[in-house]
Length: 286
Image (cartoon, rainbow, N blue to C red; front, side):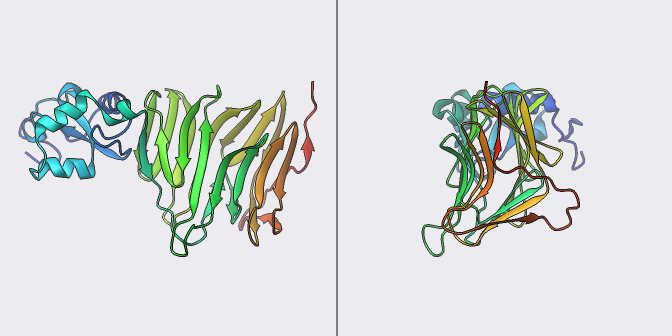
């Protein structure tokens, strides 16, 4: 037996199809508590005695719950019971919290950076994405958002730094600081990277809401309305104070960088040679 195999020669690496089956049956979170960042646990037999990676004898457990089992505080029976009635299926979501500190954070959409902008995306009066200041002096900044798929169905929410994913999607993976939400094997509805400096990057997006399609791919933010299309790439938006809004879509008019109490500063991101911008664009009706 080596570190990579057990006494039967079974490798620690679990086939992707087995991992996905375990994620799906658990609703994409720990079967006990619903945390979205979890491990694949051999219940009985344990990995050291297993001859196969049998999903019927395995469960999706977060590090904390897994530790309670391996240290003898929780029984295997508890894991079997949780596997039969997963938290996420019962409660309608998996969840976890972003690491957001008390210093001002940046949000990167494609390769456009937003700093100190309270309201990121506003569509026909509905706030879809925002980063609000701390409620207390030492508290964290608060990010909230609603993310829809290409058919207009809500798939992912952020409520003051806690994210939640729907348990009936095709797949949600959380690995290496990356959250990837797929509505089918080929289509990524949302891909968010958690950066080490506590910023977040929306790397991929395919969202339809209230007649407008918003996409992020290859660093470019694109939105479409009634067959017309505009792109944004390579900018940095920042405010001197509060209440700025980055992207506004209101009855066929798109604005970028609208001021609130203070001005919104607009310029290229450092190191960006190619930048493009739309501002106060009116899409034709009809």
